[in-house]
Length: 277
Image 1 (cartoon, rainbow, N blue to C red):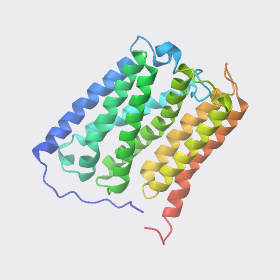
Image 2 (image 1 turned 120 degrees about the vertical axis):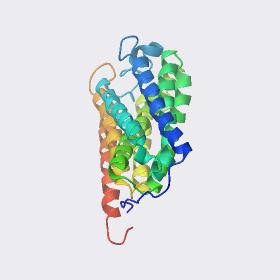
Image 3 (image 1 turned 90 degrees about the vertical axis):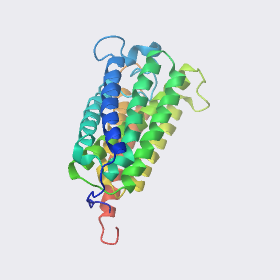
């Protein structure tokens, strides 16, 4: 199990200082732009953009409105990360060297996604969110494979990026469902309920895959599981009331949320056994 921290002995370079400043400034711009674009300070909310294609009642896979409050926590974590990585003593941190540019890219992609949705392009939003998910997956792999350095910085990074990846994984599925609905592709043989169940089962498999791959890094996988359980749980709650009541989708969502929550806990327990590293 990869829990030990390593000391940082490398000397900081000019490139390290440039990275720190760029990530800090970029984070301010990206987070500020995302807040403005999402309607936090007035203007059109994301739920109302693109003719409501991404609202809480657009498709059976849309999480209910309270689910989106997780963004406040994610943005807070990203802001804390941006400040922590900019501290002089963190310049040569090998873990931050491995992920900081990627994290900045994820923040810029998130802001771009908001802009694309506000422009009314649901298809474009799918392309951007898939790119965002791919970038977060790269960060996840690097966090799992790179030993912890400073305890506080590692905790902030792992927790924030775990929540970020978990939520975006759920949001990607909902975004694709919205695009298929807007594109009027029909029910593709299974019907809305059938396809929703299939996608939720795929989400469960994805949650298990995250937990298994990152079993030596519960500081990342448990936040992933929490965020996925949160988002999928709100899909279930959204299907118990409102215009899209669907008991089958709701029940499946609650089961999948439990799987997402418990999978990283189970793999972490297995990882603590004496015969495991």
